[in-house]
Image 1 (cartoon, one colour):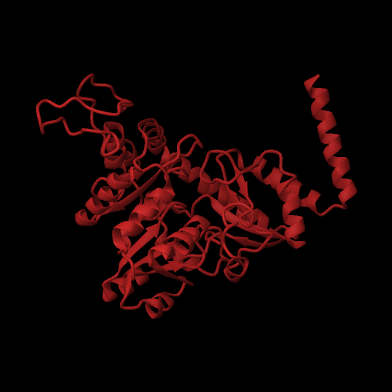
Image 2 (cartoon, one colour; image 1 turned 90 degrees about the horizontal axis):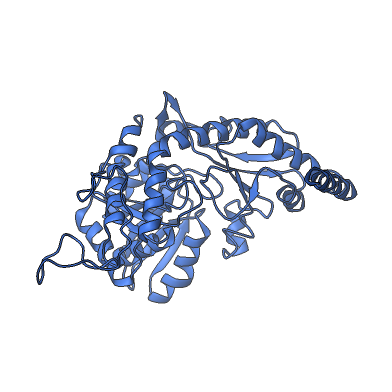
Length: 412
C-alpha cells in the first residue's frame, strides 16, 4: 500500500464557490431551487435529490479513492440499506462477515429476511470460507475489516479474487481505517461503505454515511435508491463532515500512534487477559495487516480502534467501564476523545448471544476508540480503572467517595 496524500484530503474534489468565491464550501440551507425555465436548472431541483453542499462532499469523498463522486446518506446504516436494496432482490443471497457491526447483523437478519433476501455469516478471515458459501443466488459479499469489535482482518485482495471468479460484488465497510490507511477499491473490491459519523467527521457532531464505487452504473442505482427513500444527508451535516475531512490524515496518524502505544501497554498488563489490535506482533493476522494497511510518515499504521478483556471476565470488565475518568463510555467511535464501548450492551445488543460468543464478542469485551489526547493520560486512566476494578468492592466504593469528595472541595 502506498502512502496517502494529505493534499487530496484538503483539495481533492473541492471547487471555489462560483457566487461569492468563498474559500469554505457554503451551507446551502434550501429545500428547493429556482429553475431558469421549464426543465432547466443550475444542477439542483430539490434537496431530497441533491444539494450543493452535499454534492461537494460527495466529490471530495470520491476523490479520496480515485472514484466517481460518492453517494452520501443521513447515516451509515442508511448507506448500507441503500446498497443492499440496490444490489439484492427477493430470492437473492448475501454473504457477510461473522464479526461485523451489530446494526448490519440486525439489518440482514430482521429486515432483509422479511423481503425474501437470505444472509449467511461466515469467518471471512479465510477466503475459502467465502468461496464455499457463495451459491448461484449470491449477489453480494459484505465484509468489514478490521471487524467490529474483534479487530479480525479479512484479506480483501484474496476475497476479491473469489468474488470476481463467481461474478459476485464485493463491498467493504472501511469505517475503521478510512482511505487514509486502507483503499479497498485498489485491492479489488467493488464498493466501499462508510459511517462518516466516525473518523471522517471525527468530532461527534454530524451523523452520515457514504457509498463509493468506480462502477458508474452501480453508483447511479444507489443514488436512485436514495432519491426513492429520501435518505440524503442534510446540508449542515455535510458541511461539518467536509470540515472534518480536511484534518482526517493528521487525526488518523495520531489515533494510530496512540492506539499502538496503548495496545502495547495493555498487552504487558498482568490484569489484562487479551488485547486485539492488528499492530501487535501477537495479532494472528499481523503479517496481513502490514501488507494491507498503508503508511503515514513512512510507518505502517493500523487505526485507532482496539479491544481488550481483563482478568475476571464480564464483572471486572464492567467495573473498568464504570471506573474511568478521562475516557467516556459511549456508543460511538472515531472522535478526538478516547471513547469506550461495551459491545454486548451497546453496539451488538441485538445480536443473538450464541452468535456473539462464536466470534469472540464476550460479555466482558471492551472496545476502545483511542483519541488524540496525550497518550500517557489515556494509559494512566485505563490502568487506574483496571487496577481499581480488581480491588475489593468496598475499596472501590471508598476510592470513588474519596474522588467525589475531592472534586466537591475543588469546586468549593
